[in-house]
Structure formats: C-alpha cells, structure tokens
Image (cartoon, rainbow, N blue to C red; front, side, top):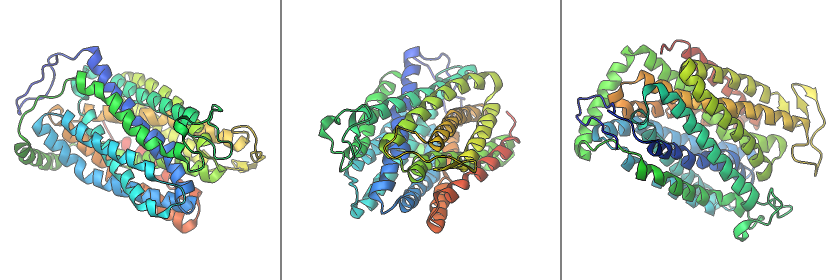
Length: 461
C-alpha cells in the first residue's frame, strides 16, 4: 500500500511506491480508453459518419469538425477548474468514474446512427461530444496519478509504456471489429472472410455502428483493475471546501504562470501542436475515404498498421525519453510529422509527389495502387511519431510542474491541449466547406506543427 502525504501544505511525494500490479493496472487505463480514439474518432465511426450518414463526405467532415470543436471548447474551459478542485479534494478515482460514465453513455448512443437518416445527425453529434468530454476529462485525472506510481527517473518509461499499451488495445479492438463484426456491404463478409457475428447487417452498417457500444463495454472491463488495485490519493476535504480552495489555488497558479517562462512556453507549444495532432488523427481516416474511396475494411486495416507503428514508436520513445529527455523526443516527433504530412498532401489517387501512377484497379487486391501504398507508409510514420509526442509531452509537464499541484497543471495541460483544439477542426471544416477540397483543409496542419516546434526550442527542462 502506498503512503502519501495528506497535509495540504506538503508536496505529495510518496514515501514508497506501489506494487507492480498497481502500476500495470494504471497502465491499463490507456488500454481501456484507446478504442474510443481508434474506433470512433479515427478509423471506423468517423469515416462511416462522413460517408454514409452525412449527405456527402465533405459536408460530413465539416459537421464532424464542428462537433469536435464544440467538445474541445467545453474541455478547455473546465479542465483547469476541475483539476484544481481535484488537487484540493485529493482523490482522483471518483472523477475518473464520473467522466468515464459519460464516455460509456455517449459511445453506446452511437449505435442509433443509421445511414442515410438526416434526423439522427444532431443527436449523433451530441452523443459524440458527450463521449469526447468524458474520455478527455477521465484522462486528465488518470494522468495526475503518475507521480505517485514510479520514481521520477522512470516517468518517461511509464508514460511511453502506457501509450504503447493503449495502442495495442486499439489494435485488438480494431481487429475484433474488422475481422468479426464489420462486413463489406458488397460481399457481406468481414476482413477474415466471415459472416459478421451477432447477425450484424452489412447493408445498414451495423458493424460500423456497433463500435459505439463495444467502446463503452471495453472501457468498463479494462478500467476496472485500476479502480481495484491502484492506490488513490487520500481524501482531503469535502467537495465544497475543495471547490473554494481549488479555485483560489487556480487563481494563484494562473498569476504565477507568466513568471515560469519555460512552463508557460511549453503549455503554449503543446496547445498548438496538440491541436494539429488531434486534427490530423480526427480527419486522417475521413481524408483517406475521400481521396481513395476507402471503406471500413480498408480504413480499418490502415488503422491496424498505424497503431502497430504507434505502439513501437511509443515504446521506443519512452526509452529515449528517460535517456535523452522529453524535449528532444517531442522535437524529433514533430519533425517526422511535418515531413510525413507534407508528403501526404502530395499523394493523390493517381499521383505521388506530382509523378503520375496507375490508379487502384477496380476489384483489385487490398491497397493495390501505388498511391495507396505510399499513403500507408506515410501514415505509419505519423503513427510512429504521434505516440512518443503525446507520451513525452505529459512527461515534460511532470518535470516542469510543482508536484503538489499536479492535477491542476494537468488541467492546464488539457486546457492548452483543448482551448484551441476547436480551432483546428473548425478551420478544417470551414476551409473544406468553402473550397469543397479535403486537401485544402488538411494543408492547414503544417502551420500548427511548425509553430509548435518553434516554441518548443525556447523551453528549458
């Protein structure tokens, strides 16, 4: 059992660290939450919404972007406040349970998003926003538990292992959907050549829609060990007293932030490059669906390859984090993202870097076109860089932030990750709507990564 200082005035440093089972159980939060990002926001449900629920892919990308923006704005406004209250009250698990419930409810409601039914679009986007708020807030409080689990010199490895484990969970959930649940409307068969389990109807895309309830059930099952085995911070105050003290501490923190130049600059850099990364992941599957005409099986297979690359990247990034420092890992990841994104914008169905190539043959093998294979390679580079970028970012925050206000600073971390996160999807949605070009909308993300990298150079660990 971990013993943690409980006095409000003390820095919360554990006198001893918990058993391995407690740390592994905490790591499984990433495993539990990742299918939401893999199945819902990136590779299955979002492309399904854009291709079959919305009137057309460009309008679907725009609507999805507006919903993502609305959820991001709410997360941005409330994250630091809730983090400050959690620091004052002490405990993290009740917050994870409450917001995890929103994730489960919102995800399960996505089952009702039938294709071609315009009346389901507003409630479907509302369910998506609710689930997004839930998963992001639950992640804030889960991250705040990290300093009590391992010594400071192992934080990078813990963070990288968590991200890598999450990617593995995402891969397995995607294999489950593609191999056993989601079938092609043309053949009625899954990626493994099987009839879909549970009698799911390919014509009404029940295999795509089942990803919502599956995400909710998956979260409940795999987050449970964390609640049972990982020690929480001790309770300090009732919620009313915590509210008063937490808001006062937040005001003091915000007042001190300009004096902490490296921390403030890092939060600003995180705000910008996270906006670009979230937008890239949110629209990567939709962009592929519009560019190559991919459906669930192609996009899902692409997602599996991307997640495998992300797993390896996050695991290796965690080791490099402890050895080289998180700032260098973040900078290297941003450079890879920039190069891969710039190359992707120069890949079209019948050309690669302005060089004409044969388009994919109708009815041909999976990813038979040269442009499709180039997109796969570049997507894997993005996956390999995205994992260590996110893992090293939370490690760098832990190194820069005061230990006794860690949840509060993770709230600010979420704030900077979300306060402008609506801008990326909003601009992508607006530019796509105005130009009717998905490529024009995605080109905007180059600016986000360049600006984030420029600011990162001014951060001192």
